[in-house]
Image (cartoon, rainbow, N blue to C red; front, side, top):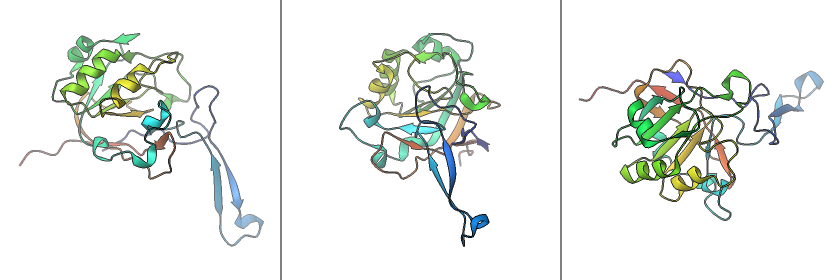
Length: 210
């Protein structure tokens, strides 16, 4: 089993301009309290997280209404770390994507897991995203900070997925994970009506068919 989560931690860089993770003590036993109780402030996008449609569409579904099924089940990891710019459907197919893939995890090699925010990362062509959703894709997951390019203002890949019933998982740590089939366990936390939910993401070898 691989823990592919990037922690919500002071060492994890936030998106430039976003709220960083900070923590402290509300009550401390060292100061005479009967228990230790911490407090924290953070953007939900700092560590591994699932975006909600509300992130890119005002008045839409928040993280409290994210379905669980897209984040749990058979998945495929493919390596696109050699690519730059736009990732085409042909690129994905050459890397191992097939039309029966329901959960696709992209290893771009541009993760914040190493402690630095990447200057750029490759992103799937929005039309390729729509084609994959029509073929049955339910989740697009990436090890970089976003499924869209860093400089994107339209967030076209987010829209291509959300508009057709698929979901988004970002900021994974896929270092050391072998490309191929896996079982994904990456349930979003039960949080309020906000734009994203923290996730503890795991991969385990697929169980053999009976």
